Amino acid sequence: MQDTYAIIKEHKWKILATFAVAAFLIFLMTFLIGFDDVLAILKTAKWDWIAINFLLEAGIVLVWAWRWKLILDVVDTSPKFTTLLGMLLASLFGNNVTPSAAGGEPLRAYLLWEVEKMPFEIGFATSTADRAFEFLPFVLISLIAALFLLSWDIPLLTRILVIIMIIASISIFGILIYAGFRREVTQRIIISIAQSIYPTVIRLTKKDISFNEIREKIIFYINRFSTGFITALQDRKVFVIAFILSFAMWGFDMLRMYICFGALGVYPPLLPLVIIYTIGILISLLPLLPGAWGIREGTLIGLFAVVGVSADVVMAASLIDRLASYVVPTILGAIAALYYGRKVKNKSVNLPSTDA
Image (tube, helix red, strand yellow):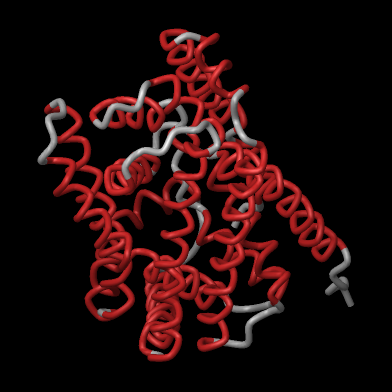
């Protein structure tokens, strides 16, 4: 598997281009709203409220790392908390700088394998189970939010987009959970797909490997993944604690957004805030731009207008939110990724020679 350096280096122009598009969208929206208006609102921000916003974001990341550690302790022997925290930040960096934001779980598993010698499939199973716990309250909140939102007087395109995002997010996580519980069905599907693309891959790569070898590896990895996944979800104590921690993370996140508005002296109604911000998180899953910058802001501006919050206030609050939830975690994640990247590289260099 490619390390973080290689992935970013290979896709650097694509990453830079997507960031440029995102920056242009933010610039364009701010220009249309009025730079002076947004800056004037930001100048009124209460710094003590902004500090609380950062503390809440730190709490979310710490609870997240704790939840992952609980799951790892059930499936295997977990590394120490600070190690997992660093790996989690590194995976957040990988997600935040790429448009797809889909590499966090494999990256966590890769780091566990390289640094802690934990089997990759076990690491991937635990990181996926970790996301599954987050998925349960997410589905509940998203469905409630969607029902409320669809009853509002909003454009048809927004309604369609919300429905598509909910179906897509539920489908993706549902497939992973199904794969964890129904290993035989998953094996047949993946083996069938692998068999159909096997001749093309062999022609392109020119590697001398039989399909039986590939088939055995698929069965081995799926069995290990399924075992670890089910073990994590079937432990009642961990299930209850992880479920509570997931709701706590969502509560912190919603409170953090309310604090962002409060820092500007604006206090939107709590229920519409929860509904709109949940939809904003759904929009953030769109694999178009890093963190859906610009797309999410435009959606929030349109939806908050329904409850009477002006565009300049929404943009200012969103920028405060992004500073704590995106910019700072990305910087800390970059430092963690560099640290573990060097650690993995040094390990490979210092491996003893196999020459006689």
